Image (cartoon, rainbow, N blue to C red; front, side):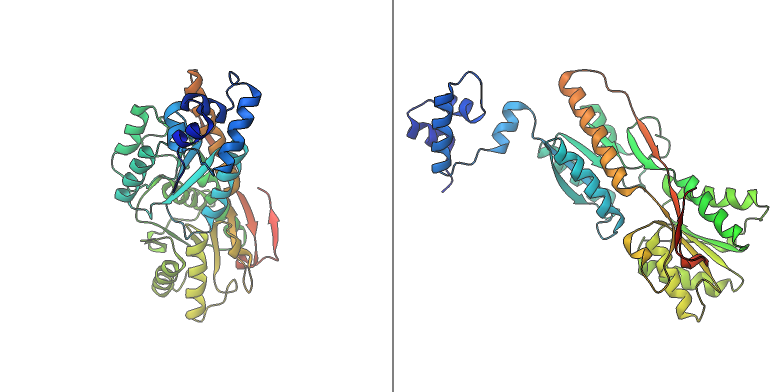
Length: 347
């Protein structure tokens, strides 16, 4: 049976208020009394109520984190960045997965609020029409930081993200420099800002090189998985025999495209060069490692959490906190899928 604060007080012959203050190391309690109460609580296996503490102090020292796809290795490093920064500052993190589902995201955010988290790091579902839940969080004064910007709301919310357009320009330009001219793009049907920026960067790199944009070399996907890359990659390669390179929205799709090429008897990179985004750990594995845009995954998580904690502290101290938008630099990692020996190139 769980020992209550009242039982500890009864055993100690002290009031519940005195026992509570002693357990919180309140300076108004004598050291001898504090030591006595702590030793008694330990003997009785008393565990303080986190809910009770949060009601008294109006803080839980807990942060919520929502991600869109827990199966994507990209988010493993993002989570590590979030948790390391949280622990460093005395917070714990509760992780939840939305699976790109808006209704699920809304319910998760409501549960977090009922659980009285102090703030939220959110990777928002982008196929949203009005972002009603985020607007509600803002009206309620709940501190939160996004892991991407939102279409039409770029200046309204705090976010930490990578420069997706620049990354796409760098990757597409590299393929052009390798001599490729019929470069395909596998993007998203959800039309979020992330995909829009990457697609725009791809098109701008083509235009700068004097290569006419060919809509027939562009195809959409319904998920971000390796199996989806295999399916849409096979369709694109069968429809366009002249294609000589592919820019994929992320590494999982790119690896699926490579598998599609092998299934059709094509060689990578001799017949088809492939590039992706994220630089997840499996992208560097043999037999053909993937050229990709490395995004600062750990830094995304840690910087977002650092910004969130600052917003939480600003709220507690009633000082103003300005809106921050932080954009981190991408990096091109050149590997065998584009025909070079494995190395890294800073651009």
